Image 1: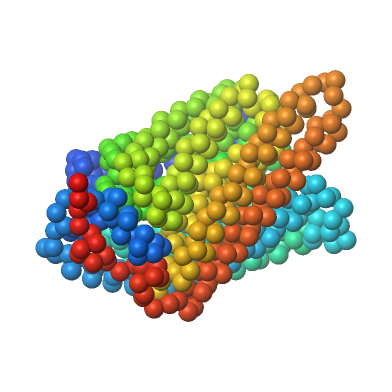
Image 2 (image 1 turned 135 degrees about the horizontal axis):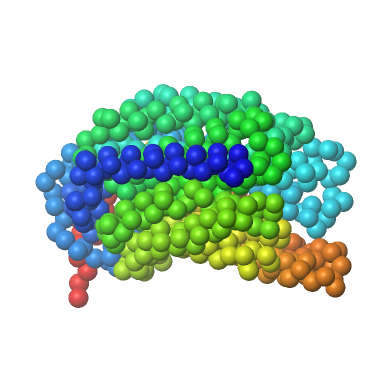
Length: 552
């Protein structure tokens, strides 16, 4: 056994011990015996049966309520107190959430611009070659790290901070720490991006930022976690809703992963590559995935006004993720100079990930399926539901891709790039888009000014991602088949990808245009907004006559 394998197994063991400690605490504190009642903890009195989407125009929202119907009498007792307490909770998180989310929007634009340049260079290699900072070898890692740590991480933390007081039903404690954390994190991402463009890098994918700069991310992330801990200690609910578990897990897992992977000169050569892929896969599965699923488990039932389909299944999905995900990364080293048994363990864990994926898929899709027509009216629900579908597809595809027979074809091809985008963009980013559409009106007291801009954003990124993902997957598979044919020159496998890379850029251009619409619209909503009007988007409660039961 190599030192790296022993180290990674020990690190994984510590993650498992942390998960076991959480499980013991959960059992000791009666977190598994509430059954279906636990799924209702995110609702106030009379809210079950009521739709809620602040990004939906009033007329469409009335139609949503008619389609939804009222499955139970809207209780009034304690409703006003609950709504006032929730409004105070939202106000308590306003400053740090605005910092984290507005920063993520800026990094989204920067990452999109860098991604477009990198994509165009793949089929126009002679473009922008006069400056070393604009070469593919610097632009591409800058794009990856800006998207991962600028857009994705900051959006996830912002959404998580907003969820904390709602889940624990208490004002956010220690909000100032999170605000300072956002400032320090921004400085870290800015310094890291500048270093990459200047040619300074640690040289490992997902870990390119020079390690001294990573210290800023560690400090910023630690400060952002303080409100979660303080609010947990002050919580006014006994049961922790499943979204809380995902947020707590992300808090535990990410610091261990990020700090461990950035220890300088810990390993070299092949052992370093093992550490690299242990981190690279786990930062997706044990950091971004919990943040995305925490949001989906909150917003899907909240928008449709129905508790999650099976609360017991949601807990099985969480604990299965904790059990199986930590070892999946080494399947990226199939065929490399790595012990076969270590790769086999990774493949087994990758296949076993079908268990939590199916648990999440059944819960999300069955909750929406019972009220699927709400997708016609609710743009927020469309984003989040499409992201949940992408999570299912990406995870199943990942399990299949870990099999040696499939991996032999897809490894070192654009197919893997398409798969990564299905997870980080199709799943995670779409859920973040939908979450932000729900959150901003609650933070600012201002409506989204232009409902058509929300629709334009959705269709641009939906169509753009389809144009990006499908051709790139096909081209990547054909590329892999060509590379395995010893009778075909290597350059043939390169040249045949050109038309697919062109469509990748077209799809990326549509997605980037959608991001511009989204960010401009969000900035207008933040800075100027618009008074509540009948024809504008609405975040007020529906009038009583509009929220009644559907007539037969």
